[in-house]
Amino acid sequence: MQDIKKIYRFVIAAIGGSLYAFAFPTKIGFFFFPGQIIGLTLLLAILIQPNPKISLKSLLILNILLGLAFSFGYYQTGYYWIPFTVQEFGNLHPPLNYIVGILFVLVIMPHLTFFICIDSFLKKRFYQSKFIRPITVSATIFTLLEYFIPQQFPAHLGHPWMHLAPHLGLAPIFGYSVYSFISALFAFAIAKFVLERKLDFFGIFTATILSVLSFTISLPENKIETKKTTAVRMVQANIGNFMKVNSERGDDTSLKEIYQRYYNLSTHGNNVGENNFKPELIIWPETAFPEFINSSLATLDQLYTPTLLREIVNQTGAELFTGGYEEAKSFAGSDFNSQYNAAFLISARGVLKDYYYKIKLIPFGEGLPFGPLNRWLSNIITNISYFASGDRFPLFETKNGVNFFSLICYEVLFPSFVRDYLNRLQGNPSFLINLTNDSWYGNTSEPFQHLFLAKWRAVEFNIPMARMTNTGITSVIYPDGHESDRIKYGDTGALDLELVTYERKITLFQKFGIINFLLLATITILVSLLKIPLLKDRADV
Image (cartoon, rainbow, N blue to C red; front, side, top):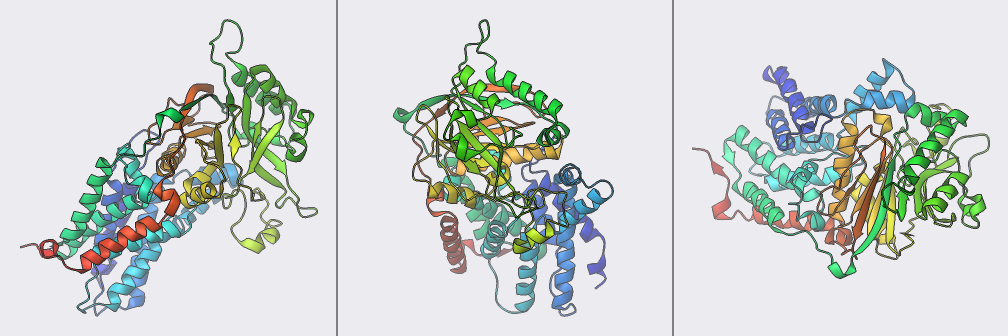
């Protein structure tokens, strides 16, 4: 038991978590792509192995603690911005915000804790038996837990492969999960070699073949004859949280400054002597318009559309798509579920064409994840918002006949939600608008991480994404993973571009979702169990 208690295991686990985090973008622009594979390998290699002297309970506790050490390293490097967010969003100040931040270590990677429990139990159960679990089984379990267990800010094992775009030919078939599977196969194979001096040839062979296929399979191509162009102006007003909150409370000075800033940025280039770009669609970010919009009235007459919005569309001749708020039926005397986080499409005539209410709300930011208890808890925990969740899945249409749909903020991080939205639509959208406000996270790595993870939806669903943010980063992401010019974090400006779209081909991932990966994993497991002679595990001699 002495070696079990050695502190070095926990240090290595924390280092592994940090390496995992460094595989994602950082504020300084540094990233280490294989970091997620090396980090997981380190953890797997130092997990306590079963022996007759250690009980299952002790094995589980020690390995879970090592997993939490890994999560701590991951938190310190990748999620160091959480205390800032808790202070800005939840109004908790030091040292409470740092305490809450540390508590996030317990839930940052819940799938890892589940995997450690399953892995430890199976190893103990079959200890000293002839049963050998192929690493294809372990990699499949890890990948499926990662996909199905809910997480607040999912940054998974396969996501860093986005650094290799456009060489992601498997993504429209299997989603990002196949890259988690490849990474897990490499990590389990290396860890097995370190622990047992045995090389899992089939696991390495499978991971290598899938990697090669990713580089050789072309991403879906859309037909050139269906090409349409939309002149888009994306407005990043860079409104700070203090001004934003004050405007929502009705402060005249803040309202005037915000209105003036959006007006100037939206209408520039339409006067004599300035550039000749004429926008057809102007886009503002999440909750850009600080006052309530009544959708039921604004769809009837432009007089019910706020004056600022009417002035902008009348002057530019463009349509306007903006984030904002709408009142909802609430419980008497309570702010619980009293408003929607919404997106509105205003026509060039100033009439509201359609709207979307955010469906997936941020836990502990826009509501609480406790179901029927939320209404009661809202009277006790009063320093967060309690938005109502929408239930509409609208398909918007621009004035030149191009269809699009919208996601608000972190909804874009969940492929199953995006797939469900797309499959509910009666038509086929040509592009996606993701309205976001990352100002709550400050000048940290979070805006870069958020953008990086959002790119997966463009690749998985073969759809261009106009990602419009308040404080940055604003850009268009294309189906092969590359970006347009961008407005950098903290900059104020408008990005004018011609958004080229096509009649989109629906991907296999949209049609069948995780089922595609399940079939692939089942086949690899069955083949590995057949013990193909040339691909058997070999002892290192």
